[in-house]
Each structure stands twice: as structure tokens, then as C-alpha cells.
Length: 438
Ligand SMILES: *Cc1c(COP(=O)(O)O)cnc(C)c1O
Image (cartoon, rainbow, N blue to C red):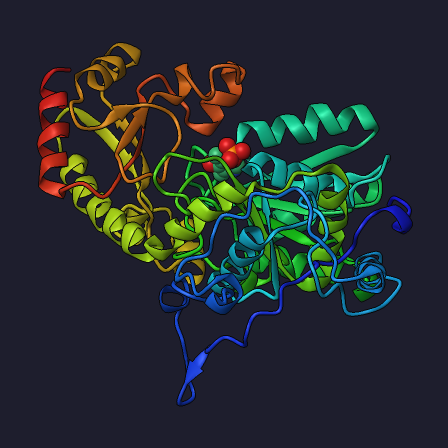
């Protein structure tokens, strides 16, 4: 870890008037808090909405205040800084966003980043040292796998993984083997995994971690919660310490920005904040503001997209040109994998709106289907208001070796679909005509 004298360890904070967080003993829900939490209009000329603060630096009231702020952020004085200092560390829009991100996961604190990958990179760099062994579930988002295996590998960090659906015994075995290879700085999960939708048993991972390490040397468990969070999966409640997001997806939700986030305990978030302050992976004020707008409709959008996906998957499931549909909503039905169904029941409150569609045939059929779609757009990414479809084997996972593709079920006939908030019957009509064109 770098010398603390030249980096800032805790957030410089605005001090808005205390928020209303409950009424008559009733705790207000995130969907209510998204409209005002963390912002005091009186601090901005009465503006109902937060302005976008386009500034690189903040003026101190006097020299003593400047010194006090720096004492706070460098940890010389406990409690953090009372004011903003410089926009690589933070700004009002980012702080309001971070306060609101914490609300969704009932977390102590949160950080915003310039992309999902810069969040993941900052997280990893905050915890790993040469000789360490990162334990992770597999598969991970392709760029995360590259970052851990190839980039961190150049700095003497190795890794060991277990398959996403692994049993507690298999997870324990992987952790024991990793401990024999070196220090384990972090256990990194992704659930549901991209693109297989396989779920990780976070509760089992936490039990294994707690049994395998003494209380003062437990590696944090971080999880990429992009696919079902923050509405349908709350990993911090199931034993994870840090929940990581590509806010580009459902949180941003309109396919018009790139950003990332991490929520968790103050202690762990502060360690990551020190690194973010040093390297500047924070999001910019404009993107933070757009995310504030997006979070106001997060529950509406995700709920509608989830309902749409359920109807569309039920239509696709029995279609003669469809081989199968990999949709979490089918796990608890006949023929669902019992282990995955058990994890789903214990961890998830909804099936999301991103699923795998296996057509009968191969690449030719998948391409014909994609080219015939009229409403759904042919594009990678997910979680936006519009429905997107792509062919992972030929696109996002083109560079994955063939054997690994087979093992992960990334076959040529796979179409990955992210359902948006359009009219469900219109989407069914579009999928129906595209299947006829196959
Ligand atoms: C998109 C995505 C990322 C990377 O996020 P960016 O915002 O594109 O950097 C990481 N994990 C998952 C699961 C994703 O879908």
C-alpha cells in the first residue's frame, strides 16, 4: 500500500441537512429515497435537482480549513474531511450518487467509477500483492478474466477458480489449494455468471472463507452484481463484503453512459478509495448526474423488463425452432437444475431480463434470426430500455478457446438477449417473425 501522506483516505463530505430516512418508524424504501437522498436544495440556490458541478477544484474558506480538510483526508485526524478538495477525489454529484447507491444494498458506503472495469481494476489493485493467489468463480466477464490472469499475472499474482455452480466442498477444496500456493487476498465472484447465467452460492463461499481463515486474516469476498443487482440480488446480506457493478447496464439503464460502482463496509471502501484517489478512476460529474436521473426509475425499469422477459421466455420455450431457453425464471420449474434452483431460492428475488436463447441449428440459424429482428437491436451490452440481442460465440466470446466455449455452453446457436421495457406483445411479435425467417 502506498504512503498515506500523499493520498487521501476518506471522503471529503458535503454536510447537507439530515435526510428523512423513516416516517413513523417506517423505513423508507430505495425507490422513495432516489428522489432526494443526499442532496439539500438549500446548498444549491433551492434547485430541486442537483446541478452538475463542473469544476476541477474546490475553494477553501480559509487556510486553516484547507489544512483541516487535508488532515481529515490523509487520516492524520479521524472522521474524514468536512469539505470537498479536488475533483479526482470526489465532487457533489458523485457523492450524492454514492449515497444513493449505498441505499439499494443497505451498505455503509459506496464509490463510483469511470467504468465497471475501472471499478474492478481499482478493487483488485487495492488488495493484491506479488505472490498472492486470487480465488474466483468462473466464468467471469471476459475483461475481468483478462485482468486477473494476464495483467495481474505480469505482477506475480496468480489465480485459482471454481465453477459458478460449485458445491460447498468444491469451493473449500479450491480455497485450500489456493492457500497452499500463496496468500489469498480476495475471493472474487460473479453471479449470475456471464454468459451462462450460472449462480454462485454466496452463502457457501462465506462459510468456507470463515472456516478457512482466522478472523483477523479473512480475505474480503467481492461479487460482480451487475446482472441482478441492485433489485433482485443482495449479496451483502448473504455474506459478501463488497458488491461491484457495471453501472453501464441496469443502473444506467438507457445505454447512454459507461460507469461503475462498489458498495460495502466503510473500512473496505476506504481502502479502495485510497487507490481511486491516487489513480483517478472516479466517474465524472456529468455521468454521475445522469445516473442520479436513472436511479429514480430503476425499480420501474427493472420490474417492467423482468415482467417482459418472463412472458417472452414462456413464448420462446415451446417454439419449434428453439432448442432451449436459459432463463433463471425456469430453474424452479420441472427440469430445472436442483442445485441452481436451491441457490436461486436462497439468494434471488427475481429472474432478471437477460437470458440465453439456444436455437435449433448453428451459426447460420443464429445469424438469420439476429438479422431478421426488427425491434430488438443487434448489439452487445444489456440492461437498457431497449431490447438487445447478440451471438456471444461470434462476438463477445470470439477469442475464448473452443474447448472452454463448449464447456461453458457458448455454442454457435446461442443468442444472448437482454429484454427492455417495450410492449411485451410487440416483442413477442418481433421474435415470432424473426424465428419464421430462420
Ligand atoms: C459490462 C460488464 C462489466 C464491465 O463493465 P463496463 O462498464 O463495460 O466497464 C463487468 N461485469 C459484467 C457482468 C458486465 O456485464
